[in-house]
Image (tube, rainbow, N blue to C red):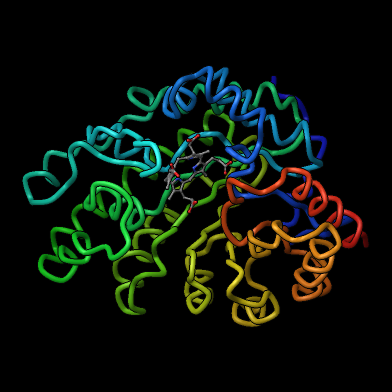
Length: 352
Ligand code: CP3
């Protein structure tokens, strides 16, 4: 038996049903800006141990909820768990971010990639989801997530983070068929991974397309959006008699919000480079919108944070369908108390 949901503002807003106020959560809400996270992270030793130990992943997922009045929890994990389960050898080098020992560079590399069974090498993620869902005990809904195929492919081909994406773009222009094969395999892996998260207890799903915004409009459609469409079409959209809303987020993708809405997703993440009124006009209220305070606004004073929160709420305007969030993940060096100021300002200023 799973506990009844006590706070469903987040799910209601994504379904564009009436809410008493605007729900709020924050990308990367569990993480290095919290001293209590750093403590557990130190005990675990490394980041992947934290992700792969369900009790620890659960503990850090709940930390921000114990501190702030947030309306959703997000699974503590990473988008790179799928390529790791495919055998790419994920490791994190301090100060350098994620790295793969076995990057994907040619046809042989693509062909030998398995589509990971979520109940085998990714079992630890499903165990984390069911543990978190149980411990949440109905407080707020749990968000599951994955990276978009294009964003995962950038890390898989580059072998880590990148500034110019020379290797993956080299593949895109010199051997597009090979990149399509990689993206198709990755999309199939994402579908089975996300459906397994829903079976384990995730109540909403988000797809992070962090690097879609580095593509030209035509290539965005062909190499990123097309595979997010494949995913939206393949997902379980209902669980326990309730809709499981799906949110797509392409960072720097403001110009494509209309074609993203055409996928049939329920909500779109919006970064801070676009005004929410424009985003709403562009999507003609067909989907909910999530965002979009500049994460750097949290470096400002408490007074300035309240002013900036009001600007975001006002730019969305009246009516439901808005989930307040930052326009990207919270920065590592933000004072946690400033996030508290933001959350309380959203709750107070959005009362209907
Ligand atoms: O939002 C949440 O609280 C859930 C957890 C979450 C993490 N990563 C935890 C994490 C989520 C949703 C992600 C997604 C993710 N991971 C993305 C897409 C979202 C985005 O930010 O655009 C990307 C591109 C990654 C890949 C990745 N993982 C990077 C670039 C890094 C940072 C590496 C570094 O050293 O700066 C990670 C590691 C990571 N993922 C951390 C956390 C809390 C920091 C790990 C640590 O404790 O050292």
